[in-house]
Length: 352
Image: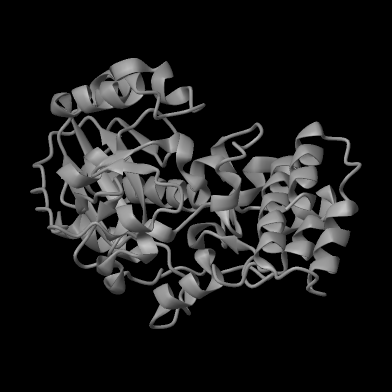
């Protein structure tokens, strides 16, 4: 594996490992999670049944899985970044986008570089059967990562590493090669439950148990309809995703910076005024999010999310505060939007 590790690092990956394909011990937990409805509207989580936990059924002939992780903190991320990000949440008129989503779409970056890694291995040993995945198919990514030593499953369900926290992407190469598995990492959460305590919507219902239907990342990205009115005030100024459980995690003081410019934050996606975001036309939204992960939610859901954040900003201001009028003006400008979804959330926000 030494050669593979060196090739992976040259491609921007921070670690690679190997997992076997017997994930049978993970199947009961997956089925219980689905049975509880914790996947919400993510029908694709249930559509493939246990194929998600059976790599050799998903890709016949698979014998091993090469796993890889890639840091995504922007290269210029300063020390104390967790505190900096938490302070953004205290500025209600400023919109917040998850750190991973401020740069280029990670699907494109990881998939291309995993394919290059596969090609480099093939040049060394000859052609072999393979398929590359990056959060793009029924794959138990976190389970495979944990089994191959990338880290352990934190109480927030994300993979945690003692050397890199949790601020990284995961990818896999399913191969028909019998490779020796790398040893798993032991858990180091101990009695800490900072991630559980900090979750704004109490989506982490128990250690290692996430109800996606309450998760702000799910609500702002995956959910395509109206957002539960009881949850809207808890979303604060989070417009795309939520990093709170990671910002509270002590292990993320070791989070590594990306080796690539791809994940550097784009202009306009951090420190921006919510009123400006609500004013984006669809053409401007598409231009500003081109090649990035935010584009997948579309302009309509973007406006829905921003409207909620503006409503929360209005609620956070003292009565008769002059700073509220520009926020109301931005909302009123969208009150006649053609989308019923947008109109509903704008009216709710104005009522705040």
